[in-house]
Amino acid sequence: MQVDLREEWSIGPVRVPTRVVLAPMAGVSVQAFRRQGRRFGAGLVCSEMVSCAGLSHRNERTLGYLRIAADEHPLAVQIFGAEPEPMREAARMVEAAGADIVDINFGCPVRKVTKTGAGATLLDDPDRACRIVEAVAGAVSVPVSVKMRRGLENGSRACLDVGPRLVDAGARSLTLHPRSAVQMYTGEADHRLTAELVERVDVPVIASGDITSRARAQAVLATTGAEAVMVGRGAQGNPWALREIVDGRDAPPPREEVAAELILFVRETVRELGERRASGFLKKFYGWYLGRGRFPKPFKQELLRIESTDEVERRLLAAAPGARDVLEQLEAEHPPVDELTLALPISIYGGG
Ligand SMILES: Cc1cc2nc3c(=O)[nH]c(=O)nc-3n(C[C@H](O)[C@H](O)[C@H](O)COP(=O)(O)O)c2cc1C
Image 1 (cartoon, rainbow, N blue to C red):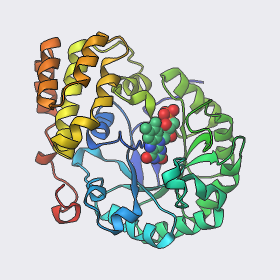
Image 2 (cartoon, helix red, strand yellow):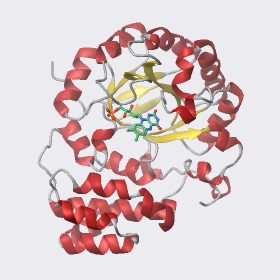
Image 3 (cartoon, protein in one colour):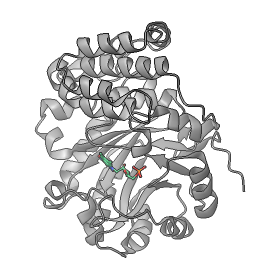
Image 4 (cartoon, rainbow, N blue to C red):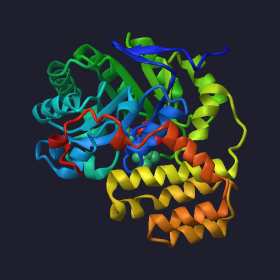
């Protein structure tokens, strides 16, 4: 069965123009990543998970995650926490920042998060999970969604029992990454569970896990009945994967386009995080962009040793001179965020 990935769908009143969602990824989903994802065909993008404790302490770095540019919509901001009350407060801040959807994280398997009772741990405490969803849904007028794993232990089917209860509690959409928390990222996402979840709820389900190609996206949508697929690792340094999935355009990008996209990404990330934080943060992206046979390995290694992002840019332009024209065009079509309206008043995010 052929599935149209360009078909519009909705989460509550929020219209999502394509059936591809860009995954929330901590340490990856900066604004440059999300804006680029939208440009390459993702119908919905998501912030990385934001700590409700950090928001309630008005931690400057945490507040920085609430900066939303006008051209990112529709966008979900994801929050995590273990208590209904701070989650309610965090959700209000997220709505005030201009998010179209508040997403709740019941999937994070990382010990730092689970030991606080947040993330995937909540799949083992459905009553508390439902209280959190109820509190959040009652606090905001935008739709609330939940992202979860299959359960904590290998073979767990907890998501099938918890999911419908979360919908009763107010979730307007569910994303399932059908691996257990113990599995982390090993093995395969078992989308047979996604199909079972779709049968049990009457809200849209988003299938997350191992979607790296159009063929895989089509197969998962057709066999599960999910409304959309979510793409995570496949889009790291590879927005072209989104275009291939949405439109079927699978020609490998020319070098100058890769270099131009990477330079734009670097510039935007420096604007968002500042040079000092950005220069370390960006290193993993150099490998992701320049790998896949796009640039020789020694060149990639060379960039990793450079601390200044200006110098990285110079080397990229020297390696792919045609990138300058592509970049100029990109910047003309997609002006820096500072020139766009930020939905959030500067007093809320602290400017950082
Ligand atoms: C580096 C990294 C960070 C992630 N951070 C988050 C996060 O903040 N919130 C979340 O719900 N999922 C997070 N995930 C999980 C992804 O959203 C996604 O469900 C998972 O990677 C499976 O999809 P994929 O096979 O397309 O990568 C993260 C995954 C990775 C690889």
